[in-house]
Length: 291
Image (tube, rainbow, N blue to C red; front, side, top):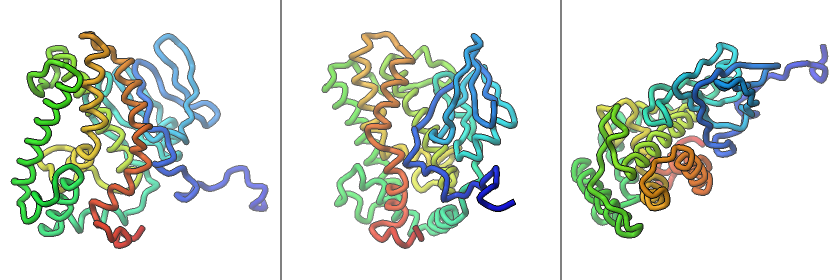
């Protein structure tokens, strides 16, 4: 059969939509993800059927009560869409499936930098420089920079509380006891976990490992946490305090999810993520990453 008459055209990495071109994520719970005519469909607990444009989505977050068929996983993988398993409203991030379309070039660079103490510290310093005065970071150890960052974050919480006229007693979250937190902490926890999910999915798509970090350590997803800190102030912290005032004491998962998604899109996080990673890993000479 001539190539022009082929029914199926082989998918290549170059023909797939890039992370920057995709919608950040959708969250699903209590239903079944399967395929119909080689496309994804979602059947919710009430029997409603929703077609999923999988090629245009970066990640699908699967919440409680979801099942997924083998063919659905295969279809999502072929479209370079990651599947992530999360707790209710994305409050806990459990796992993410790998997609097979990324090569190992980025992973090799990440491992090389992380394995060199001097270069690893330089990467960490470039990350901190996105939110701390550069003159404070010159010659500073990782421990010192983390201390400065901790002080900055606490100050940011207080400034946002004052800006939005919201009462604030400090950051707190007890795993498994979400309802014990105050409204601002609930929104922070939810937004942070959703951010971790889309970053983890994007990292898999680009061939990086979420498990090899430069600042965080001793946790499941250190590189995800490293990168999340680049965006948290504007995306999660400001959102939490502004919504606290808007929601008037009552947590509404639909309002929080919608506001978070809109902010991810307006900040162009997926569009900027690859450039941000290039810069923090390689500095101004991003060409050394081989991209």
